[in-house]
Image (cartoon, rainbow, N blue to C red; front, side, top):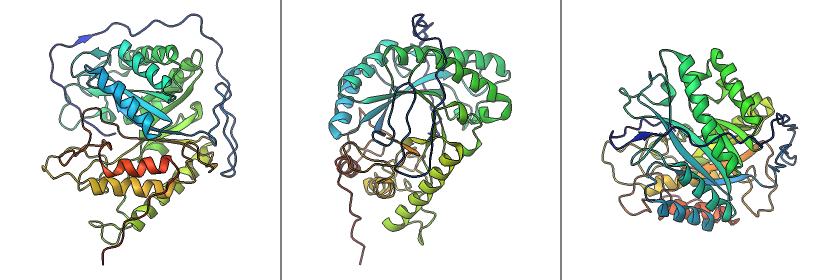
Length: 393
């Protein structure tokens, strides 16, 4: 997601290594994924894991590890995610650099920074114990961004040292993924300036190296308006897209979009994504879909900053989820559903599950706990489609 996160300095230290490479892992490169896409009834099988996309898509909630000093809250959040009926959890964990021009990126552990390797491992193990599939998504954040900088505007003066540090840091997170049997590893997230042709070999090198020792699935997560610009999808198992589209574009009155207009917009987006997936021979995985409880959630769902001090709008959040479920049900099959699903769609991770905010009249964030959106998602996970609200007379 587009975020410009600023953190207060102090009490933070740089850890040297998150883990050592495991010498006893396979060193042979995993074979390429073989896929055929000609209809919703076909299946996609990963040659190493045997993951059957059409039978068991990933339907999960994201858990952002930015304040894990209270680990018990995160363990409880995983229990809540499992009890809701999700089949997977996405663990988003940060790496840091000062600003967009910094020469390198690394791991920082401490208050208002990132979790320890042990904390990440504890959460991944607990998720597995609760029967959840796991995704680990490291994410670059700036500690002192200049203006409206965010990771999509990364522009170091010298790319060579930055890439060396990024590859080293990704390898450390990959060690954690290997140690804890993570199902999906995300090699990068929304690093838009690295989509240029001169960086493609860097990405392919990172992906190829990961395959020599990691047997899980690999993807990259890009934004809803740039997925067609990524040139290395052929090296990955899935096309990862964060889905913060404007849902009001088909509404006669964008300020008051009807449920039908919102559903039609998500259907339009779905058709474009699945067509792109078919053209690339790779399934799509929606790595982020979410709506803040704010009045503009349906138009600018990426914008969670409440600079206007607007009141919480849980109805807007619920409307976004209702439209998504109505449009994607059938293409993405909930756990235990008799629906076969579409082999071009690997699933969705909803952003996000908030361990600290559990609803209430003042909760304007992305969290769905304690809000109407949770009921809609829970019903869908248990095979009950949401009804559109009655039309105003």
